[in-house]
Amino acid sequence: MSEAFDAGMAVRAINLRKTFPSPAGGGLHALNNISLDIRSGELTALVGPDGAGKTTLMRMMAGLLPADSGSLVVLGEDVLRHPQKVQDRISYMPQRFGLYEDLSIQENLDLYADLHGVPDEFRRKRFARLLAMTDLANFTSRTAGKLSGGMKQKLGLACTLVRLLDLLLLDEPSVGVDPLSRRDLWRIVMQLVREEQLCVVVSTAYMDEAEQCANVFVMHEGNLLASGSPSSLRERVRGLTFSVHPGPTQSTRALQTKLLDATREVIDAIPRAGGVNFIRSWESTDREMKKLLGNLEVKPREATFEDAFMMALATQRERRVTSFARNFEAVCLRPVETERPAIRVENLVRRFADFTAVASTSFSVSRGEIFGLLGPNGAGKTTTFRMLCGLLAATSGFLEVAGMNLRTARAQARARIGYVSQKFALYGNLSVRENLAFFGGVYGLRGKKLKERIAQVMEQFQLMPTAKSGFLPGGYKQRLAMAVALIHEPEILFLDEPTSGIDPLARRAFWRTITALAQTGVTVVITTHFMEEAEYCDRIAIQDAGKMLALGTPEEVRKSCSDDENIDMDDAFIAIVEHARSLKATPQKETE
Image (cartoon, rainbow, N blue to C red):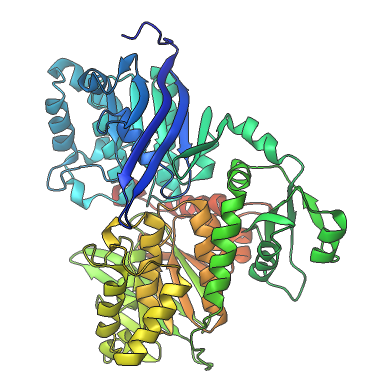
């Protein structure tokens, strides 16, 4: 053990540097002279945009990646010199944890206990505790491949905890997980910190999760921008956070766009509870704000950690969100003028053997509408999506997309839609331009038209043509997937959890793009686990266990479950799902 090490510190990094070769040539500074202390027995968060260096830092803490220079001491040991001593006392849960999908819950736990040499007597008590904490005790015989996303994450967490630890590293554990499962995961983490005095370091794209931590480190492009408790970081935006509701003839999205475009006066603006929450810049004057907002009533509000995060990244926001959105809006897709709904669904049913994934669902989506399809993991959203895209046949019911009956004209309908899946599904060994050329050809584009569309979407999404797709950061992979989906100028765009795992900065840019698309007449259908993103939608539907629970505007859905005008969509979603589950005779956990 290092004599100079403070026993109260779980991690101490001094001038830590790590550089990787850049696909464009030269070096990419993943960590640039990072120095930080993480205290024992506390919950600490790493937050930052894609490419900030969070995962690199975690891998170095786990002894999986050596530093180029600087020092890193974990649990009193120099990680570079003694990685095994560190690894014997920690567990690391990466973004894609290696569950064995053909093994049951119990078999996965047994396997990880065997790998770590956990004694039989200890593991029996440990397994009982872990299964109780994760609510998995009734499903130990179920294979991991048949678990929902939330249950998989809980099993992954349980597998990392089969032995007693001094440090737990969690790299974005709640990516792709619905709000109920996210709540369960964090209940488990907080319980571990409280009862076992476990030191937990978590990277997250959810700012409300970071707000629950004792300390937060804000990173950007390998640099440490800010650190401290969430309350101390919120002090940086004290007196600068406000809310405003649109006028009678103005939409919430239009008001948000107006505020975001006022880059001198406004740092950030997001839809919330029927209005817009915004951060006023230090440089703005009362006169300027009056000119910007007119007679709209502006109310002060309590700052959140997300406000503090966006303030820390204010300069980057201005460059990445505003310029990106304007660049996109400069090239409009063709509008479609018709009164006919873009999508019409009547009594849609999909069964798998004796399991009903979608039960008698009906709704319609208008041209140019942004329609949100929400629900917990296993709710039937992706199944509904696949049927709408013509990738999966319905068991029964009527389904019309872009004026085409999917039972009789599936191929014709597919030519008029774009689709972005949950996971990056392009060719990683091809460049950006090569992917665009290939998929443009698949959609029937040729010659001059194909070259024009490739040039247009690369400009819209600020993509480097020669960059290898597999080496792109997460946010840029998402941009490329969007560019591919839009290259043939579809009438309807299907987006299946497109913002999963990307930071608030990238989500802002993404939604500016979606808003611009809808204004050109493109219909957008989207699933998301970020409930605040439902506020961007014109209407939303909430599903669970294949059944429709709520349908309407975000305001109508919020009002349906509470008289509190300030209720946010996260709370509304949980209330609606839990109420529906409470009415069932059998516990919903068995079908989660």
